[in-house]
Image 1 (tube, helix red, strand yellow):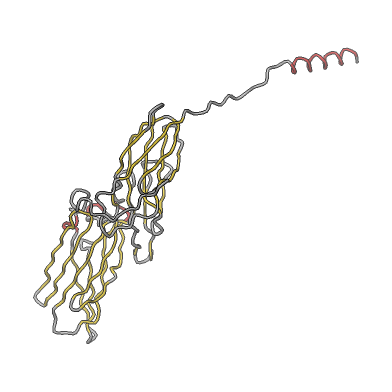
Image 2 (image 1 turned 180 degrees about the horizontal axis):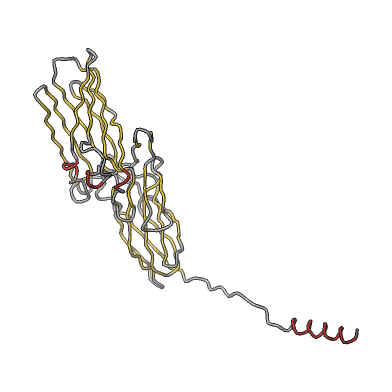
Length: 296
């Protein structure tokens, strides 16, 4: 019994003498980051929302979500190299997915009817992607960022000459992209859908407008998507109907940052045929709406 007691005491002393394990934690070195947002090429009718969401993707996999107002962003981040996505907020009709990685982040509009392939219209979405942003020690990272419009506004004016009285015109735009990649700004080809064009009558002209990410060409979407992307259904007072289908994808291919963000589509329908004209609305430098500057 005495030996047993001695052994226990020896073990207790030995265990008690072992050094305690300590996990060392080093505070990251922080540095200031400043962005100024340039809205010089903003469509006059655009609504940019209330603030900007900024997501920083660090090389070690960490993701930092921060907010700024519509004029600038000021914050602090650990020193390192980042990829950055910026977008205006709020955009209630747009969903976001794949945001855990810079390369997979997408914006999308939800379907109105899955069976009919109908999708809703997006809000005005402005976004910017920085493939590399260096945050260095003892130096403020100060950048000017130009958010680009990710949606296009397309206006339709339809004039119909016919001996029959026209009761109504319904329009639908086909092959619209319902999703786009935020890091590249490119549409997701497999997201092709359709959206209704709300049309009102003013005298002899039927007019309407839609917001879309873009209109896909047939080669960009599924192989079985239609080769016509504008459908107009005309209802006459005598109960008869007429459907006109057109392809305007080539004319809309010029939409973009360097040319313009909107288009006007004029359609004249007569018993002899259909005349189509598409005009790209060119950028006008500095013609965006006034953005109030918030004083801190």
